Amino acid sequence: MSSVSSHERRDDDVTTGCASKPTAIAIAVVEHEGRYLIGQRGPDVPLAGMWEFPGGKVHDGESPEQASVRECREETGLEIVVRSPLGRVTHEYEHGTVELFFFDCAPVDSTQAPREPFRWVVRGELSRHAFPEANRKIVERLARGEVGQTGAARQQGTARKPGPSGPGYPSGLGNADK
Image 1 (cartoon, rainbow, N blue to C red):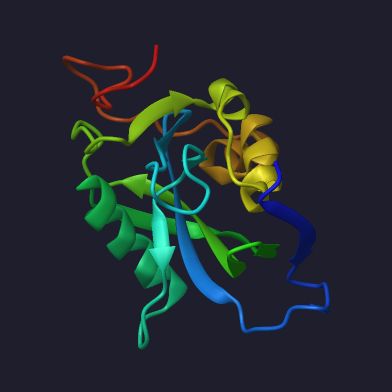
Image 2: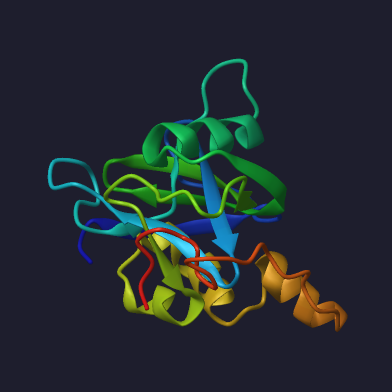
């Protein structure tokens, strides 16, 4: 992809060659029963047509965790809870440098459908969607089940507590991919 440079770092890397302070972006990686909430970016924004998790700029006076909850509510109409941080990535695009704060989140009401263009996809489908380069490593780790609530339960050898049951389950996630 021509709009992406190769400058990326993790928390323990040193940023060099970045001319400006990165824009802080909070990302809500919302998971429920092995499905993730993603949406396709519109045509008139940077990285148009790419897929993304709910998220956006961290406002003055709010933490990245608070911003992930607010942005998810604003973009999808869903209330979420943050379970844990998933990591941080700084990446330089042609349109600017971003510092992404990823959070493992869960929906408060898993039966509520998200607003378009967001939808639920199964873990195995994540890698079939084109995400921005700064999301590449987290998407790969999610697709392999290495991070997030499900991955943590598998690594610890414990089963996840089953979610609510009833009409519309097991997905219970509105416009989920089958």
